[in-house]
Length: 69
Image (cartoon, helix red, strand yellow):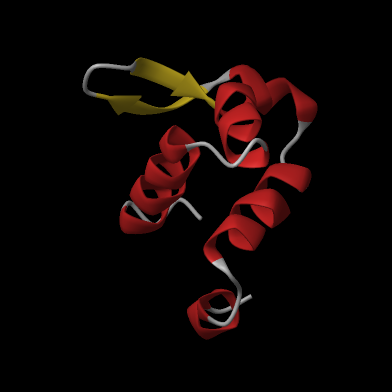
């Protein structure tokens, strides 16, 4: 899929689509290290994003910025 496809999708939806397509074994891998929070795995990020926390918003923003999602 090209980048323009993902640009039309809401940020959290982008996260959930990428997460759903990850092999289960990769979901425990660290994907992001945030100041004052520390390392975040896909699973930890999923909990934050799914619960609509402020940290979840930061995670999605950073993953988009880093072009991970």
